[in-house]
Image (cartoon, rainbow, N blue to C red; front, top):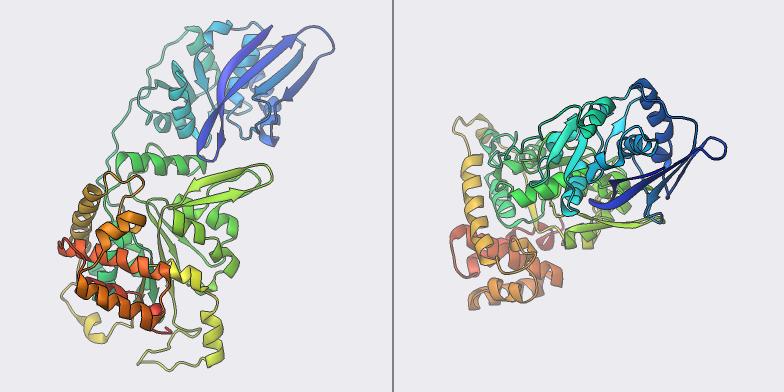
Amino acid sequence: MAARLWCGGLVGIDGFRVDLEVDFTRQGLPSFAMVGLAEGAVREARERVMAALRACGFKLPPARITVNLAPADRRKEGSAYDLPLAVGLLAAAGVIPQECADGWFMAGELSLSGELRPVPGILPLAALARSGGAKGMIVPADNASEAAVVEGLPVYGMSGLNETVSFLTGASSAMPEPFLPPDLNRSGEAGDFADVKGQEQAKRAITIAAAGGHNLLFIGPPGSGKSMLARRIPGVLPPLTFDEALEVSRIHSVAGRLGKGLICVRPFLEQHPSASEVSLVGGGSIPRPGAVSLAHRGVLFLDELPEYPRGVLENLRQPLENGEITVSRAAQSVTFPADCMLVAAMNPCPCGFLGDAGHTCTCTPAQIQRYRARLSGPLLDRIDLHVQVPAVPYADLAASRPGTGTAAMRARVVAARAVQTERYRHIPGCRCNADLSGQALERWCSPDAEGRAFLRKAVENLALSARAYTRILRISRTIADLEGAERVALPHIAEAVACRTLDRTSL
């Protein structure tokens, strides 16, 4: 007898259909063969599934078993094929009727005792099942709330193989997992900017960066509050839309980092200078998303930026420019979304006290030059705002009056983003000022006559690149939006130029 079931595999953050075919014949010596470019975890499914069937009381007669995963020219990996394989074996052996499994999409890992364990990537697989017209999806109970996010697809969470077989044969019934609308108005657990003493100039720069989706670099001595400021940035960003939450959740689902339901707050990922290239931008023999993709629609924070290997940092050029990262391997090439807000921090010199009035810098000019040379010009060019974060004076530390808080900053950011959303609603792929390019940049960021004259002098005197020029225009548009101005003017251009410290000075 032969049986066919519907399941799915993953390429990047998208699913593709896999037909699991089982041929069960009593002719020839008993054997088990699996074909169709199955990777290690899929090939090992034989042992897990056979042990689970025995533990659940199902006895298969000796037979020659061939399992095909079609299409046979696409690699399949992971343990999500365990459940459909077990049901397919039972259908092929005649233990359950084939029609009981027709139209169902299944995914899940089996333990040796027959219990179902959660697997990564359920969210894109659920989207695949809905688009393919499945009458329902059967997944491990721990994955049910994740799959139920996809509306229009009945999702049934099962605890084990016995429960699944009873449900398919009609011996028991189950209710589909309910869809719970996510609360997208939460701002996460970021602290309040009111807790940060002083640093009002840095808070202003953060407001500009958050309002326009710009990248940001803090430069200052140790203990000035750079990390404290960065970790509070998600609190001022506007709430995720449902489509954005779904997009972010798909990435985290593939990476196996998604809990129950959608991600409702903008992600914040902090990396250490010891991070490898794969952990930062993604990769592996089977490409998986890295930190720059996991921070999609959120914030990626890189502290001590010059301490990262230069080769690792250079891989950030593509996502900072295009909002996506392509990971190419011998087996396949995968493109992951990577439209995040980069926030980085660095010291002005190896000892950290260059320019600090309260400390003496002990670095030689050669040491300072080598330290700065760790960051390439093209990478710095892609960071919109370069902000000095000086040491906080005692008067600010001892002041009892709180500074600007998160609520006030968030209100200004949300208002500016609303203006941009309405303005660019007819421009594909443009959500905020940081996405502007081409004719849209010329239309919305063109300054008045005084602003144009000031910008011309800045470009000539500071030898700005074409990329730096366009980023100044985008920053100017964001500043104008925060001020409620219809057109970019001289004050907006001047503040935008002042926000790029590395263009004006040598640190």
